[in-house]
Length: 189
Image (cartoon, helix red, strand yellow):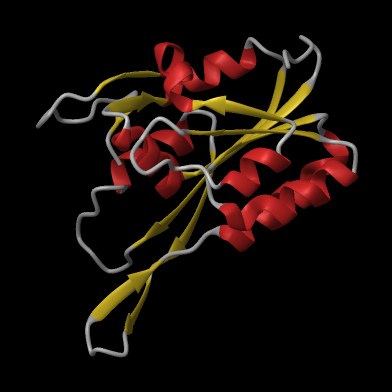
């Protein structure tokens, strides 16, 4: 499904999920090129990037990416990571952004014709269905080419279109360079 040049588009990027998918494919993402790619396809109304952050750390590896995205056309939505102790007494962290993504997608439905969700999380199947019921087409970007696949089958089936991240990498990515420091456009979350 090729969007019309005047179609109003919004991007919703589940940062942790997209990072996992790109890493599984051995690639880094160029977020500047990602914006260019979608601006060429229609009127890009908003590009959201969601990620959990650890508060109180002097340096966070995600901070340079979050700052760059915030200054370069993305609406960055962060949430503090929650720390908890599991049943075995191990310290764990949790940073789920599903509610933030769901609320923003539902709020933006009256203003766009097409939403692109960068996530393979099956929990979004019902959200995609609700957005579609409001007349908005939904494309899901993730990968089936990794082991294991990063896309939940129920989400892929619910979407109006599924874009294989591996097929999009020539436009928005580059091969992963081990040990390379991220620059202002290409990030290794």
